Length: 413
Image 1: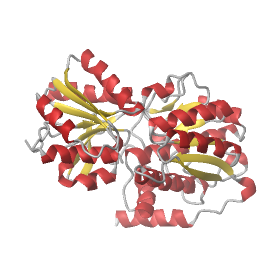
Image 2: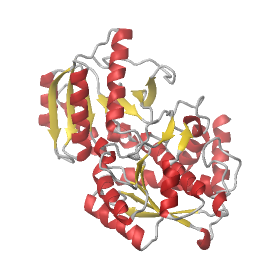
Image 3: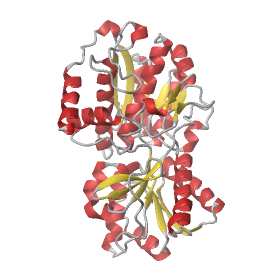
Image 4: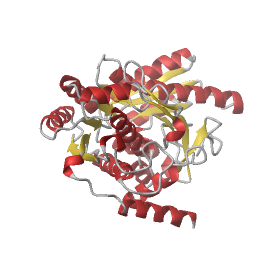
């Protein structure tokens, strides 16, 4: 009955959206891969952003979250958010051109994006040149917030913060259960995301006195990862740490299975491993996989907005919110709140409001301490969690205050 009630609420929210008048629209450009290999991620992102815009714009019972009361931007006379989408095709140069088009032709007052770090890098160069805020909801290369850009804001934690959580989890579990991780293998694509991730993990492993017994780099979207699977098997690590997008995540799990290799543990840098396409693509091979995550769908006690927002999203997309789509919801909510607090669509006013952002975690759907930007535009209060696949679904296993079940080691061994 509870589930039916949530879905009914979701349907009512969707039906009650008040149409926006063109004169009142606040145009936000949104850049994601909507075609090509990464299209499933971009299309999921579009649903997440559309649902969030409905929550912000619609007339409905208040949701327990930032911008959850509906009715549009009250400090702009009830103006409505209008999202204009652009297809990056997961190509940094295409993303650059689309960012420029959104600003110069669509007159976007701010830009959201972008999934991959490589496309976020080029988009942010354009937005800085045109002096338009760019809120990066979900790209995680640490270097993105280390370039001295004035108009770049990132709501998600980055890979150094995520990797620190992984190594803290290893230490905590070793002390608590005796499952010590003393040697790891890195597996990463040759992109900005993969390179930055592996560099951070190499440093953290050295600090923790954990041996890196293999550092396997591969070309993204390779037709085969059999040779790489053999290298991982030969290294025999206590845990493999992959940094891969969806198609490669599926490929490496299948390649390891084909050579009869079941790793002792897989601790993913999220990305493709958190996508429903990965879980569907590898089926039971995902059982026991660990992943860092921004999001905990099971943290409903401390984040009551999760249930109604997830119900809305699921009603439109027939799947639950995940690590990526939850961060996209949060990115738009934070940007809309800044525009509303600015009481203006002028870029400098929005930037000033973003700088002043200080959102408590319980006003979001994320298990974070909150959203607060440092001098580089990086959210310093994004606190990651560790999750593990059990029964085909991710469950939170760390930290203890949000865990819903204990970690299980050596699945399949």
